Image 1 (spheres, helix red, strand yellow):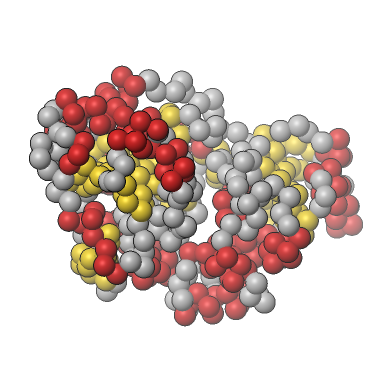
Image 2: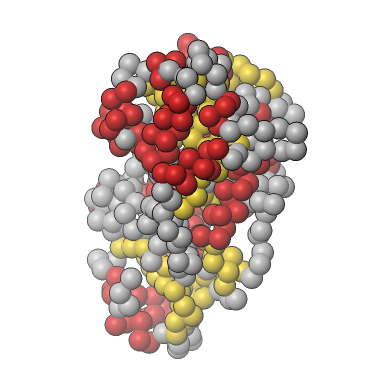
Length: 426
């Protein structure tokens, strides 16, 4: 990130970047990771030994909103299974979409790699959270929430989800359990899970719902319990560097392998800071729309003090990103969003809530259409220099002559923490 001239009037506390990424994994290293899964005591077996010839295998992959490097892992996995006598014709691919839009054929090819995409023609399926014929009840959680998942996944002889572990602002971490809930769940199951984000009595986020938290986080704990109702035979989770390189592959039991992947996420994407700054200049990078750019806003907000400011560079070439999000963000105030979420629990409503609360401190530099900007309701500036000057002028009026700041060139992938707080995935 180039430092604008306007920042000469402020004090830089540092550039919040992850440590240097490890070299990308080779195919033999991927195969070795699949051959040495992470199991609880008493269990074992390589991923290639879990599937027996003749068994039906559901391979679950994430949609285009999650980069996972499945195109690197799947060819290695499939070659190993074929060497063990398994026929690819006994396998099928299921794209976990949650409530996202279905990916296009071209996008699925990009997710899988062209050779795998061609091999699985006729055996590629996209999850639909509203398709009653392809949903099945798998049980009820201790909180009384009925869980329904994709029928194809539940009825396959072997279930093998592939996902990517990453920080998530209310599930703690992505990957692992999230491949099933919300990835393969029906709309009501997803809504019930996301309802746990809100405090049942006050207009606030429920205590424990926190970035990087799995234990003590009711959203993450409910996801795991729901996923165990249709426990995968083995999971494969990748960890990517901020620039999309494949840094790690972890396979094994649903929770154990996921936590191992999360530990690497913390090494690559966590930045401990000694103090919060007056403002942050952050970039959402290539995030295509506001739904994805919101992650950069969320992370940047963790690095500013109360009353601090954010300059957010978020081009958003695809605009808002979801018309249902537009419904939520256009509500007249935060109280109305809380009220609406208690009547209809939707993750996009929670993204709108976070946008409203954290966006009040932000000045957005974007290429979104004016109609999208108006609906988003955030202050905008035509360029980065203007936005920074505006922030500095406000601090001057408030009596802060030399405000402090952080730079966050990859704000969507870097999570600031104060000191050593928030460590969880043991």
